[in-house]
Image 1: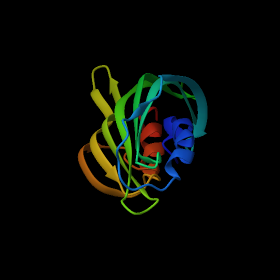
Image 2 (image 1 turned 45 degrees about the vertical axis):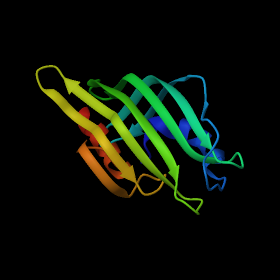
Image 3 (image 1 turned 60 degrees about the vertical axis):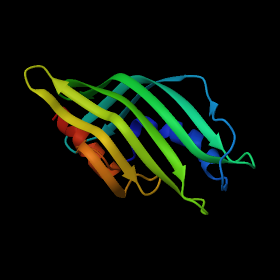
Amino acid sequence: MKNLRFLAPLAALGPLLSIACPSASAAPEHSPVETQSYEFEFGCGDFDVRISGSSATTFTEWLDDQGEVYKVRMQVSAPADVVTNLDSMKAVTVSAHFVQTYTRVPDTNEFTVTVVGHRYLATEPGEGIIMRDVGRIVFSDPSEEIVSAAAGKHDAATPNLLGPALCGLVD
């Protein structure tokens, strides 16, 4: 399962990341804040889950001497996504505040991805933190399937861990 909250912003990055470029020189370009509301459902085996929320995202891109992108930074704030078990109606709020940076690997069209902050943080009254993906993590490519470095606590670092972690919140 992909990192569900970020499919739209990542789709917007696709054309930017497909351009080859070597050295940096121009000042970064900043986008205005993009707000997005979303609601979607997915299966958790014996029950279905709905996630609803909103996020505010800004993009900054760095260009080389030829005007081609060599780095993109995405700042995301999603303060209150709600994960709901559609059978039991148990619901948990998940917040996210992080910076995700795509950096071109020199002399290639490949990018690494670095995430700093908390992509997923869920708490429950009386229990405290029940799920978190916080700290710093570096992925070897934009699929976010191969972790090359990490510091912090990562319950849902890769796409194959995210779905089960979200389902476990409301099981």
